[in-house]
Length: 480
Image 1: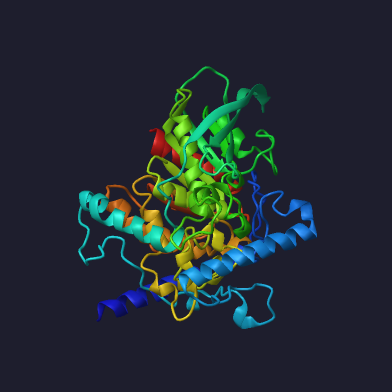
Image 2: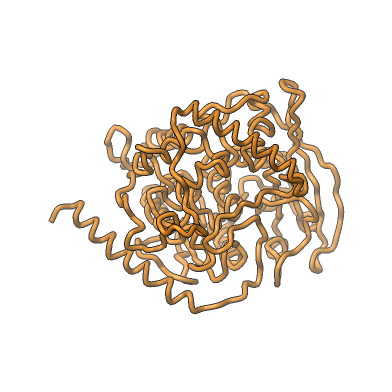
């Protein structure tokens, strides 16, 4: 039988099995013991939330002004890319069924053949770690930079970190130090744009040094504040004797098209609009994380070689991007990341490329991605897909996390697993176990034995239920 026909049949029966599993899971309910609160997406509904204060406290005039700025920036990028209006993204609330998201696994794979991460652009099979690092990995990095996330410019200014405050407190019965950090970016090249990265780190007040650090893309405010029921993720980290840090993405780059001429992107462009290969917010947030790691490398209290990054939703996307491009990141907890995160572009399930390249989300990515969401090009024309972003993390510890079928289906929970499965051969080439199967494992049955893991938890668009599993995974794969 023809090899491609065999692969298609295998894929078809595999996805039929995947399609059956979520329906059994739908009847099960659970109350997560720990919930990470992020700007999130309700089940099957794209979120329009942005970081606090984005629209000036709800002032309508301010909102209209920001929309006009976004519209002008978006039109400028469409003109530079040389395309018309992109295809409309999926609309969960539309009365037109053709515009609603697809959740049928039998039709979710219109482009079942993905780029092979272990075949070079010249058609050669990658057969060794040396060939991966010297030839194929740089190729994939370039393809993502040119087509999806953009390039960090050569003229990014330096960052000077300072401790703005330090307090000793009691945290759930444990004495801790709370340190507030500010990374001041040199804006001498464009004094009208100021960028000050906001971060904090909480660690046990026991005099120990070289602590591992778990970092979250999150918000400012009280670092010890807990959300939801049970122990917070920071409490779980502190109880293990590690440090817990938070970095505020919106202090690096705004989560809006109207902010692209400010923040670190605007500072590098001196207030001008982006070019099609310029970085978007996801890459900028990852750059900010790298600068925080720079700081951690200067303080013996922390072990910067044992850092992990975690994020949910758009911050799950940012976490995967950050880990893929900065090989100092030892581990990633990639939660509910969807398109532009772990879920493949070639999948038609939940959100679509049309959503990502719309005027509401195009700022996350580089302008060149828009052409793949605009006729006549399609997702299948992309020279890379998201399994290769996961592959760039190899052989470091990567935990792909999704929520329940009903609570997280907009993010394509099966697609995230497929990407992990397709990235596994790269981990295996480098001597580590991947997820070990191409059959979807189902709810609460994580594939936890390898250096690359996948687990779908009860609960929705959040990381909370998977935190204990990730911390055990981090301890096993990074600390031992």
